[in-house]
Picture 1 (cartoon, rainbow, N blue to C red):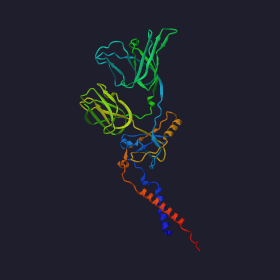
Picture 2 (cartoon, helix red, strand yellow):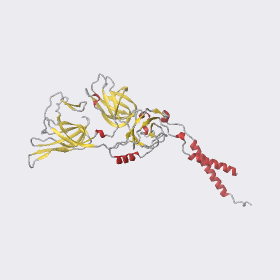
Picture 3 (tube, rainbow, N blue to C red):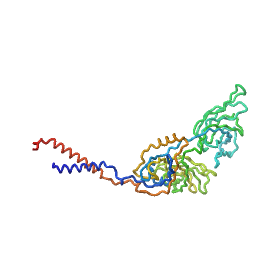
Picture 4 (tube, helix red, strand yellow):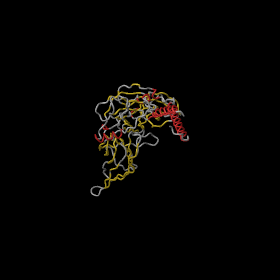
Length: 451
């Protein structure tokens, strides 16, 4: 091969190698759909930003909020990530609560009705027929959610020996066991007497408690009180987003299985954690199954809400927090009008560190760009260790949002860029030609040395 040919081939080879190994240019920087300028107080160790409702309309559900970033004034990403709330603090509490007897029902007649007032007080209304026999069930209200540890029953005048079951609830509908076949024993008086009236409890916090016994010997009369001891979380110390409520209009209604389906389309896929329902005009009672619709023929059942006169939306249904954009209410009977639905949701929060050049900006929504894996959890843990468990990142405010790349950032490009593959092909061909030249030179017999 001529010398100038070899030089040209070498130039092409070097150019292809350089192009193939060159990083993406500035024009290839990730694009985000929407942004909010951040107003952050100076001098903080870390900042906390809550996503506005509009952000969920831009954040792609399949990205798991990984398309949420914080950038500085120069557009460079700063260390940020989802905020992990601090462990809640609690303090011990002991209270006396009256035992409220639940009357026995009669065969074939509706039994007593148990409900809550708007303030949460227990209301027990007797059934249609007079109650008969001894009382075997009592309720009491702890007035707040208490993680109960022990329950002491009132003293008795005579000897008592019976077993009780103790359950707990947050809504007077769903009950969880706290103790089963616990013994209550009072024998004798003075020295040598047996006085076992304390039952050990365990489980998550609850406000309402139920005591049941199968024995007719329960000695608790009107005015009897129990003493409940446990711990309660300091409401002021809760490190959580404030729940927001959104009224959602009914979008469609259709007949289903002899009943009705009422669909409610949310403006965005919000992290819904509670649902409450009120009936429309003309309806006074209904049983509604709450479904989170996830596909054309699929959905997740979230629970059942029974709406009765005077209750309406005073009893929200708590659901596992998850992004949902379509809620369906199914009634086994047709209603006169669509129920009114409200969804409760808590904004996701992100913590970021004061890096780079302020002011900062919140960017949301991208088909391809994802937030870097910053070790922000370790940074926050170090700050809590240094500043104490009560330390919190400084909350920031957001200005009005504005479009960045808009829908363009959310579009998945179908165009295939062949530039880089072609450069690699040229590179490989050049390497093959160089290898062929080397092999040819090795096979060529040595010539006469130049004069």
